[in-house]
Image 1: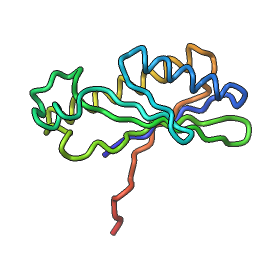
Image 2 (image 1 turned 45 degrees about the vertical axis):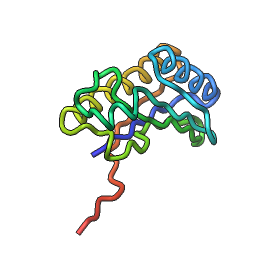
Image 3 (image 1 turned 90 degrees about the horizontal axis):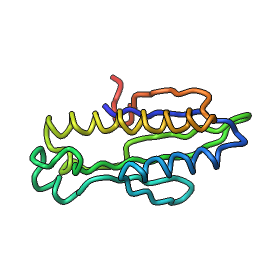
Image 4 (image 1 turned 180 degrees about the horizontal axis):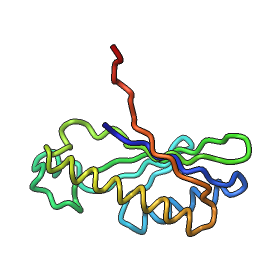
Length: 135
């Protein structure tokens, strides 16, 4: 089950928050592309991960994230979530564990960056329950 992390930041500094996150992710080797009011973040090699799975070095395992900005009265929310990876790039149990470790690293990086920039109010982790049916 995937996790979504929300970072509440000061409303007046929402552009600064996005710029801080963009710069931090790029500095740590991620490819960042602004698209439709959000940042699409990728790292690793998709083809190598699909072909070699767990045999790909952890630093080259393919990962995708999305950072979206939304506003609520008084502050803004940066939402970090997994973007669609596709089944072929998970890499089995080893790949899933690596992907989870990379997620925790990226979530901590974003939090540290926003906190260091003085714009973070708080962080909330949510479980993504999309696609789960309740019976």
